[in-house]
Length: 249
Ligand code: NAD
Image 1: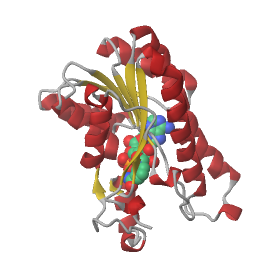
Image 2: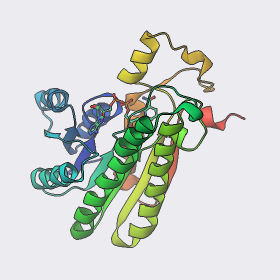
Image 3: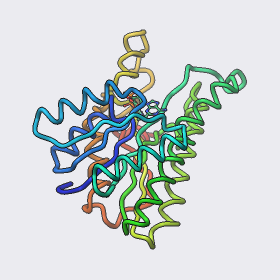
Image 4: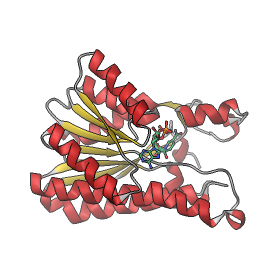
């Protein structure tokens, strides 16, 4: 599905991003795996290369404009061209009701999840405009479309990601660039595993009709399709992947 494509993945060292890096390579892409945890990104890359794939690890803090510009420059140089970008970095925050949400927590969440996605898209759009097109996929969340108790800062940052995605889709369609957002429900990744280990009972949080949480691989499949030419008429969408959770009344 992704034969010959060069794809940049941020937050690619763990969870959904790592599953995407592996799957995109299985589908024929070469990938640049960018992460603030470059040691783990390198482990992911080593495992891809050991299986015969083509990948490079890049260090980046996506909340820094300077580092993001360098990441896109390095990815473009190594890949030849960035055909698609999967902007997947996002952080949740400790649970707080809105009237007790510390401004420092709000600011850090917005810096990394919202501003980081904006900065990534800005650098990618400059590259893709020159290259004649591309596809951008951003990881948002159902928390960006629905109220999520105690995660108000996270939800607001993901709402920003969704709106930026739609704006980019509208502004850049004429330049051959598509932009879509993925809105996962609860997905089995290290942060969720850590919460479960700490005693969080997801059965009370999830009312997904399918009765289970999702896998990172299932989210990666949607990201792969949105990066690929198979979704050539899809842009400006925020697509939930949640076992039907947001379809319930
Ligand atoms: P994860 O923690 O396994 O992976 C996130 C990766 O992002 C990590 O490798 C981390 O080092 C990296 N990262 C964090 N801050 C960074 C920064 N400033 N610069 C560069 N890299 C940075 O988490 P995950 O569960 O795979 O989440 C991936 C995305 O999916 C996030 O945007 C998250 O908000 C979103 N999401 C996850 C779930 C879920 O249930 N797991 C649900 C909805 C949305």
